[in-house]
Image (tube, rainbow, N blue to C red; front, side):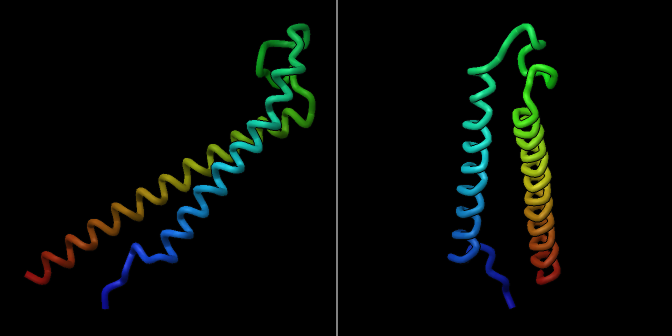
Length: 96
């Protein structure tokens, strides 16, 4: 029984997750644009936590957490692809 990887459902889910991910990046980026407008050199170096308000700190930490989650998801996807490739190679070598 062969398991299909690229079905319409899986492709649509993948595209949906990518669109959602980009949308979240856009939202976080737009909200962080307020920091650029209100940055004051006397409060500290540019993009340091001491020069940010609490909401800007939350957005900054949120985008960094989102980056980490994306890297973990990417690593997991690469792991699954490599595992799938090696499993297919092992199955094909057993058949011969």
